[in-house]
Image (cartoon, rainbow, N blue to C red; front, side, top):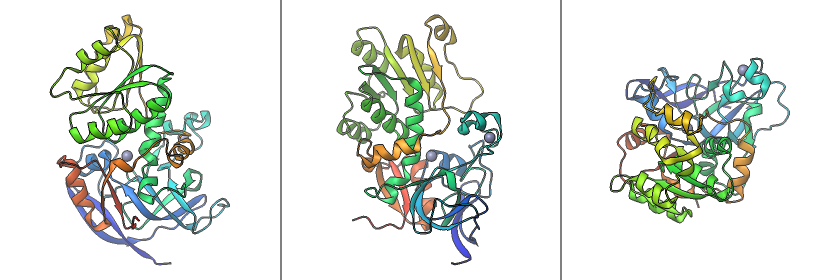
Length: 346
Ligand SMILES: [Zn+2]
Ligand SMILES: [Zn+2]
């Protein structure tokens, strides 16, 4: 077992360095994972440009990760070196009231890999043995790494209580929006998605969405009104996080409907019409990460009921993490999800 490893360290504003750092040792209840793939996420870009409230430099970024168990700490019985796994990127305290209620994503001492503790854009990463899940054999490591956003989208959609036949609007066909769309379709909803990028609208159509809207050339509100005979959507899922799209949600939903805010602007206050929330008896929901969602996500992915293959537009080696972050930051044409991986795909 080697003692030093390569890691992509964000050392300051828009500065990534490939450094040689010690391979961490798993403590009690922890496992060491040899990383095979990490999905680059919007939050990695936020950390890189200094806009993420939980990320301070220097930090090894990366939290959407899959790999192979390399070593286990004391007390770990369920994993053996060589097991192929995905990592649910949390460390939790197990003792706070949220942890005791089973809502571990709301732990007062929640630590997220690649946010407050070293991430997976490295050759190895530490994980809690209880937050590691077996990789479905029919998924590549890059696909399996995307169980992280699949789980985040699942957590949000499960919270909405979407029912068979509901008309659901998803704002934004980014990674999370496209996955929330797939979960809503699986629940038997009729789904409309709003997305400015043409190639993502095409991919959404191929994944079975019923309605696509280009918000740069048509009014989403008019389309929703026409589609729902003036009633409004049963549920609106916001997966962008811009002040305008957050505010738009309450104008699209029907009286008594549900709004799920996955996106967030980072501002203390956004211009959402709370009078309408009250007088139309809306249900306004937030979401943070995932909680008991990975097993279901991995089943759905293994059964091909949720597919991430169309999202994976680019694969880069660890040495090119900064290039990948720049591609995402600059919204380069045709770039959707970038996997940092050395895996050969056949
Ligand atoms: Zn992420
Ligand atoms: Zn806790």
